[in-house]
Amino acid sequence: MKQFEERIFKLIMIAASLIILGILIYIIGTIFYKGLPSLTWDMITKVPGGGFYLGKEGGVLNAIVGSVYLILGALALSLFLSVPLVMYINFYLPAKSWFSRIVRFSLDILFGVPSIVYGAFGFSLMIYLGIRASLLGGIITVGMLIMPVMMRSLDEIARLLSRDLPDALLSLGATKYEMTKVLLRQLMPGLATAVLLAIGRGIGDAATVLFTAGYTDNIPTSLSQPAATLPLSIFFQLGSPVEEVQNRAYASAIILTVIILILSFSARYISSKFSKNRI
Image 1: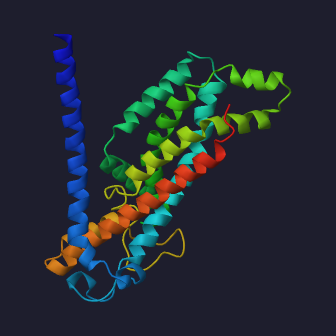
Image 2: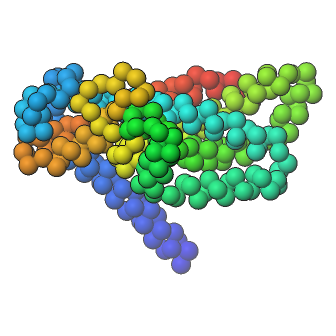
Image 3: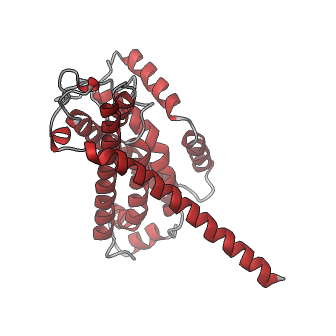
């Protein structure tokens, strides 16, 4: 009986894995099948020309650059706030501190908040601060969106480390600065995972940037200018009545996928480089 149950659950796991793999292959295959014929060098290296959304010349360079600017700025903002908070609640507070429990509970709630809510909150905050739709507004809003993802992922890795590690380092004569460097090195694999999850959620979201980053056919040269993003570019292209423009949306999706892969592999490389000497 136990062997029969084991075989049943093994078949269920294999079937689930094959279904997930099949869905992934189907999505990627559809994107490449419809988008690859429309993916040209001009589309990657040029901004939209007049009548681009009616099938005329131009590309999505503005959206490519805007997406990269946006996610890098949001990651920098999130890292600046996430790493100190995670280290504080894990290595500087007591193990069962009420403040730590409140922070983790708040992050769990924020993790599940829909992106459109972040977009609405960011838009309201921009109105209150007198900020127009711009790259800065998009960075702040996307930063708020990915911050709970990054903090919670990094926190789970930090909780696996020994809480006696800081005391052990200090007892060996290390300064607080040296202690912080060692702790950060131990957190590098978790930090890479947190960055990957944050990139996946932030760069492909359209709801948070629709009213905060705006949209423009030009490449932003300052934080106060509006910025186009690939998700919004895909949305506008799919809304065109011209079939050629709709196929360009799938080509833009290919570009977005490639950017995510490049950023993901870069994060993995940085993680492996700085985690060679982990304790």
